[in-house]
Length: 131
Image (tube, rainbow, N blue to C red; front, side):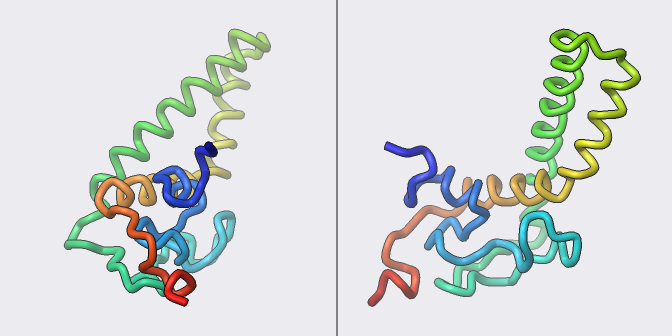
């Protein structure tokens, strides 16, 4: 049984798909696109699921992003210093560079996690599933 199999929360989170039908994209552009990086459609283009369930809905995603980036920073800096013996200034600089590159991905994953907590997968709601 695969962790990233369609029908699992992990599938919609890591593929950045609609949590209801798992077919429509959550974001308008690709993951590492720096044009319209933060733009989401109002609804899923496949099943019509609203992506903004209420005003300020993604406020909770900020806390998830904070947790993800905090652990990422600790793991990267800790590994560089303790395992590879890198000087702390260099480790910190590499961590900042990595976080600058991965910032959009952290933002998107945090939103995908947040909406996946609130919307249940419903097989058969996508256009491809209907026939």
